[in-house]
Image (cartoon, rainbow, N blue to C red):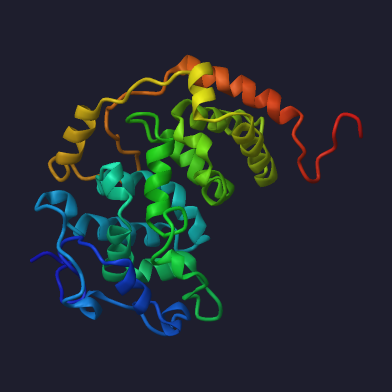
Length: 293
């Protein structure tokens, strides 16, 4: 018998509408006095979108259990960098599917509400979640969708290394993630290269660099300066359909994402150099300017 099968845990990931989710997130749930479960939504949740193995809840639950075990003695925020690439590789979605809030509502309220309380809990009980959006809300705020989308936007083809770097910085997750610039893959990689090389380091510097880069151009400008390559849709489709067919994800090494094409190195370098010049003159609170020096 599957160890995760029980009346409280669904065998497969389905959908839960925004309206049903909103009604269920009561003050008692937010204050940590009550934890919801799958049985709370009997007859209210929808079936998975198809009958493939990618909707099994067991791999996701095993992954979340491991995250809690690994980071139980440190700040829960430290789990983001470890979890994001592995969640993306485990829960294989198209971007259209990942835009469906019903999937994330179901995952947070029917499958793993205890994880949401662990990651975002505070107060005396350690389970008080300040924002209902951590259960069911905007894509860049919801507990699981923010990590999935960070992995999707910051991965370099099948390489999840940049995702670890991005999700290890809460300013990128909390602010940069929703900026238009990272929709352009070379721009997203350029920002991370600044971070990797130490050109920016503090949260204020990361936000300042992203702000000036975002203000200096739009996707069309970036595409003209540093063109991206069209991703291989067929390779992505094959990767999605192969869920559950390969070896289990290794917790001590990064998995591989879809082999749908890497970011052009030259394009990322062009924008890295440009962003660094822009950042040199950007106002950063607490940093001396050249004239002040």
